[in-house]
Image (tube, rainbow, N blue to C red; front, side):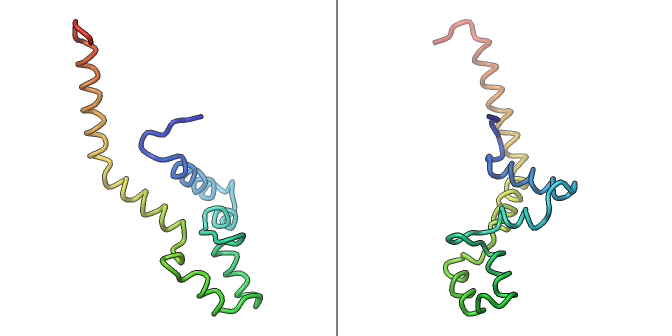
Length: 113
């Protein structure tokens, strides 16, 4: 199992899946089916398709997906989390370098606890 230092495993998987879409290895619909928000057995995209086919009314769709921010697609949430990390990357790198410096300094000591 790989350890992710900056990204969580979910974030890494999300990025890898999107790169597969860009490279043509995964269909866009597969991506949204996998990463779209889910409630019960169906996701936002599945219910949207039901509305288009007439299997679900728009009213039912709204009732199901507009409570407490459930309308937010998980894809949007992941994009936001990744953008926030990208913006903070300089701070993260500084903190990692500081910890590396401390580790190096600690292991160069003659006396260790």
